[in-house]
Image (cartoon, rainbow, N blue to C red):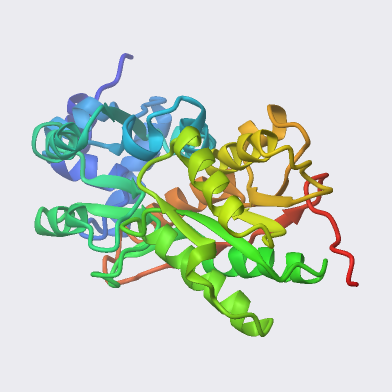
Length: 343
C-alpha cells in the first residue's frame, strides 16, 4: 500500500497535524499517541515527506543556511571552510530525514533578502548562522520571527542563544606562546576588520598572549584589513616590515592574509622559516598551495558542523536550554617558523 500522511491519519483516526507532530516528536503530543503513530508508520514503511510536513504544520522540515559569496568569502577557495563545516551537518540531517536548504548571496542586500525568504516564504524555522558581527541584526530578526537557530560564532549584543565556535582567543594565545618559545619578541599580527567578532576575539587573544609573555603591544605591529585581499595584505606587510625591520615573525589571522605574507616576504627577499617566520590559521590553501609549508593552528570545522546540528535538535524541544561549544585548536608544525638566535 502506498502510504501518505493523509491515509496514515485516517487509519489512526487522528488529524494530519497531530500525526505530523507525533512523527516530529513534539512535546505537545502524548507518548501514547507517538507510539501509535510510529508503530503504524513503521508497519507501512512510511517516511515523512518534508513538503507534506510543511503543509500540515505550516513550517518546513528543513535547516536553512545562507552562504555569502562576497566580502570575506568572495574567493571560491575561502568558501571551502564553509563546505567543510556543512559536511559535518549532512550526515545527521540525512539520518533525521531533514532537508538542507542553502542560498547564496552576492552582497549584503541579497543576504538580508535570503534570510527573509527562508523564514517568511519557505517557512523554515531552523537555521544555522555564521560570520557573526559584534552587533548582528540577523539575531534580532530571527528572535523576532521565533526562528530556532544555532550560531557558528558569537555576537556581543546577545548572549541568550546557542552557538558553536572556534576558540579564537586561545588559538591566538597559542600562536604567541609558540613564537615566544622560539625566541620571537617582535611579532606582527595581520588581522581582518574587527566588525567581525572572531577578528575582535583574535585581537583580544593576541593582547593576552603578549601580556602573559611580558611583551608590550606595539600598535605599529598590528594591522587590520577590510577584506580578504592577498594583494592588499602583501602591500601592508611590505610597508610594515620596511618600517620595522626588527620584526621576526608574522601572525596571519586568515589563510588569505598568510598568502599576502608569503608574497610580501618573497618580494622583500626574506626566506620564510629562516629570515622571518609566518604562522596562520589552517585550511586547503596553505595545506596544498603554499611553499614553504606554513605552520598553522587548525580547528575542527567538520566537528563544529556536526555539533551545531546536534545542538539545533537538542534545544528545539526546550527553547530555554542554551548550549555553547568551543572547538579545541591544535598547532600543526611545518616549515615556516624558525628559532631566533639570541646574541
